[in-house]
Image (cartoon, rainbow, N blue to C red; front, side, top):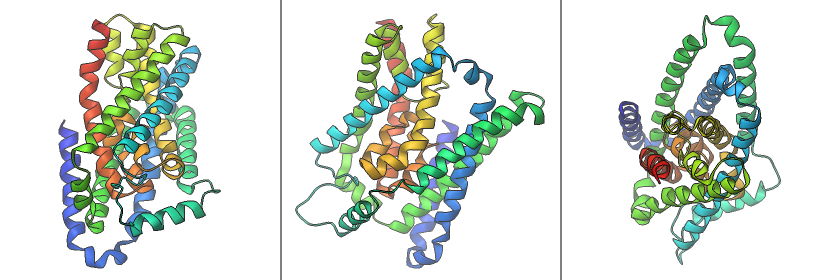
Length: 326
């Protein structure tokens, strides 16, 4: 909760500063490149932490395969759920309410999207490369440089936290420079709350299907899916219920959901829709993945992303115990 409050305050400060320099927006274009560099360093650090984690490496066998299947199925159903919710709410792929008036910005974005349709998004390649390099560095070098994984994990945690503080300040700055976010958000209103609920439903439907085809019960799979990407909480709750294998799958699945979310957010933004990007990371949409969502989409979707991650995070300690108690 303390970190969340810090992130919100920093984003608000960034927004305030951006709103005061809106007339000098062109001179602050360099912040976009700085944000990209910060994202790369953040993803590198996260990848290194995963590569150095013995628990992750040890679970890359059958549990890793189960976790990958669960993650892919849940991501697909989450995207479908958000897509359907967006259509019902009459919100276009850029997160704007559909109206009879032509939105010039949307038209421009659509033209750009169509023009680049055959290309692989550069940001996707950068993120994939950063994740792979981080995993290799973590696996090969961390134990040679640091006395223990705990020492490295503590340092990496501080680096990630500092990186997030910088990135979320820049996200706030971008929103302030843009100046249209509050008006657009007012138009959408409480409809934005439908999206995290759609993600939760899509995740649970995907988990239910996995429970029918994988050697874990439907109940266990639903508990795994209800982690919504929060790998530090859901596995512990499941383990306390005496379900060791399900706990291991939950840990790997939630780690994979965050990593695959980071990798595929730019691609989904380009090929499916801006709003659908928030379905990928689940709870991580409000912190780790928020800068990547904002960089790959727009300030409007950054607001959607934060609210979605916040709601899903609140649902985890409610849904997982309820499912296990059923």
